[in-house]
Image (cartoon, rainbow, N blue to C red; front, side, top):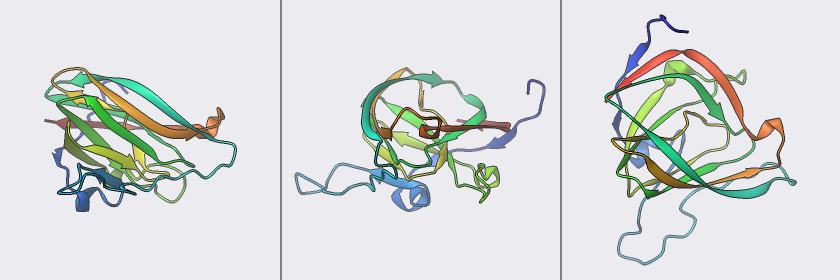
Length: 161
């Protein structure tokens, strides 16, 4: 899709309410030392196992062009920053036919002290950091089948930081 004009979107700072249609924003507990059930961990397949992986994310510059989204139709997916200053989260809901509803695409700026948990089926872009490479721990349920992750090409979208 080179040469195709990209639709511009501007990212906004993430907060729990704004991110709620897509998942949960996970932040450190307030005064207590523990916050149980902080995210809705979902697994829709009995044969899927938890996959705890380490992800190295590449940094983006002041403009980032995306042409593909992914979703996990049977699993939630959580990302926990281990060595990250800030990162970009790009999400949308399903359009009801199994494709991303790019008309509702939203980009969030996230602090390296905040984790995210995507709801089952949330369309999202792969992890990218801002300024420098980063390291995340990721939790998703997988069984090795093509239904672990669906990818869809979209018309280009450009996020300006």
